Length: 280
Length: 197
Image (cartoon, rainbow over all chains, first blue to last red; front, side):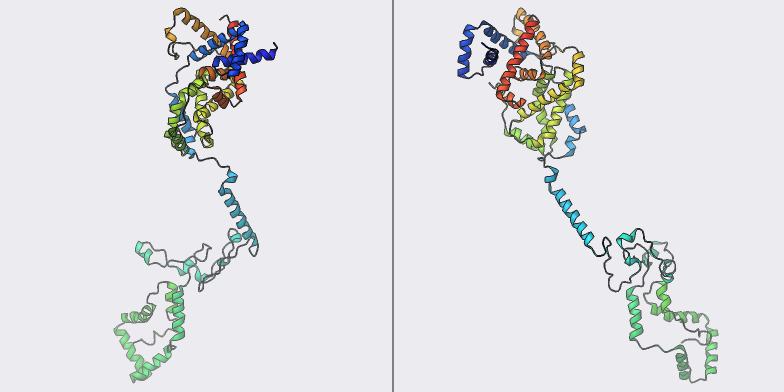
């Protein structure tokens, strides 16, 4: 009997101890065992060892181990990290593809835009004054300094002092932001500008101060000298009424005017005749 | 001969589904159901209590992380046993562990604090003494056995797995299981006989 035959027989005997032989193998093993005392002893020893291994005591599971396992899972982040959905390789998930496609599209649009990477601002809205900062580009936004606004439009001149009370804040004019430049540029309200222009265009031209004075002298039936004397006496009788009456037309015509600039545009700036006559 | 069958039940499927959805309670239940078996397998291979604790923790941590990849092609028990054997063998492969094991005292499995199967106490004193001496020698010889052979003995004689289950757990063909088991038993027998038992 060769070494391989013995090896084969040992496997048969080991399997025989477990009762896992096929009928043919079992018959072959029985024939050999009849004539081989060593193999019978081997079968006996294997059964004995298997029994001993099965009866070997095993330390009991420590009572704290289940808690330690749970703690290990928590501290390891396993319970917090995810829902255990079937794993999908990242290149098969839709997000990277969508992100790559979006990035590519944005890059193509960026490069294909007229003027290279410079993006022109959208056209200004109709009636909206276009400032120098309104022509700013995205590429120049950070580096370009905003040009100084014209002196008449400086906030320090055209915007009243900052209101201190809540009521003043509510009534105070709010300077609008020009375009996307971020600078404070108070602009003339279009309503007022259009209305002012419209009133000047559509109404008949107002008579000059000289013409109005001549009309009043003529209608009074007095000579020019007598008219001045009479008006001078009236002024001495009521000096305080002069200021109020002089301001009344401007205040009434101002209506809802709310900025100093608007008021200034409505105040008469012609020659001062207040020293020579008094308006009715 | 499958003496310890574990049925693939709807309850187990439900537990797996819930654990996959991130329900910690479901995985706690899986741990509770399989902890003692995993503990025994790992201990029979490592034969060291503290190492067994560490590896058992690793087994369940790895199982939880890999649960998404569990496709149900085998039973959950087989899958967990495979992880346990693999982790135990990997633990023994580490160089530091080899050095440590060579210098540590043998953990004899016949201490009174250890579990003993039913019927062991019913023997006569002489048989019990012989069995105790055999167990002591067996523990020494199992410690010296190559890890792959020891794992085969542990699964078959310790956990009474079938050859088919062993093939699934060890990831080897049936013929390899049979030959590996035969070699391990012959080596154990030679070792014990050399020790005078």
